[in-house]
Length: 464
Image (cartoon, rainbow, N blue to C red; front, side, top):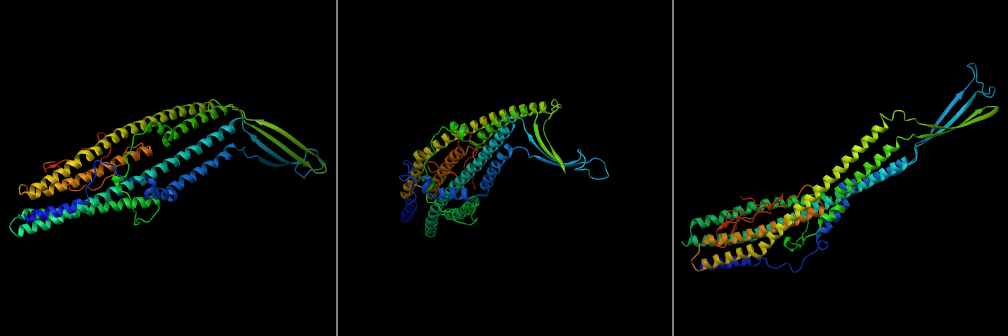
């Protein structure tokens, strides 16, 4: 029984420092402001070129407002009128003179105000486009940060898994050398250690991808380190909110669509006013040399005699565009409402799965391992049953982290008011007896929990 005692001692030492607390929330929950996440977000908002470009476009749209409200440029006309072709008669003939004429076009009252209002609505649209970029950048940073926490959490579990397989390998080697074990046990322990190295390589690759994403967003070097103080299980779980009410006021797409409707209405009003003629005031001075100068003033009016082909058609065009924009606004609102309801259902299912892990799966996995270990110590259990039960326990902890990450991802998509669904966050799954499988209370392999029904993306549970 010396080998059994060594196995129990070795595995207990390995698992003792990694036991979860499934039935209780973390005693100290770090808020976002207390973690490097807030720093990453601020650096991204300060340095990201996409957001800088959107800010420049807002400023560019603001420059259009005074242009739209300004009067048309006046025109200056210079001329000469002379009697005969033989010589200049200015100063000698009353009808010979130089001419300086200035003409100022004057749009029909109300047209300039409407053009300025349309330009102001364009500024508001540019601001909501910038807000969309800001929300997306913040969401990308949060997703990459959650992904980084997930990968590093999986790597911590993998380290625990590697330690107990190393202990198991040493014990199986001793048992085999003294004739108490089989070669199959020794080969299995060696095989699992190779598989763990393969999984670690995949996790390290995924960690580099998340690091590169965060550094791209904040404008840093792709190889710059990113520290993480919190663990994924330390983050507070998402809570239910009235996202539909918030989306009506905070969704950039909804607000931009509403502004588009208002712009279409103002364009329609402007098209109707374009049926009225524009005016032009002119004033001129005509010096005549030694004779008294002449002057003139006048007013001209444009004649919309082709209004059936132009102005009336423009009104019909803008009316159709207003209807189309109204339909587009309704479409955006309906789609956003659908996405919010989908994610609410997904989040409810994800939180239930997290609760199942905390109150059931993790507890039973641990109990299964302890039972198998006790049977092995008593000489009634198989060596592989103990190892597979412990593997399954760690694999269930890995799946628990995946479920936590999925819940956080859904919440991030809600905060982003995402119209395209919930982007996935996943990491290489840890291995159980069949790589990616959990353990049943009896120590046999079973499939992990199914993803939330209707979810558009679920944690990666790939088998190797």
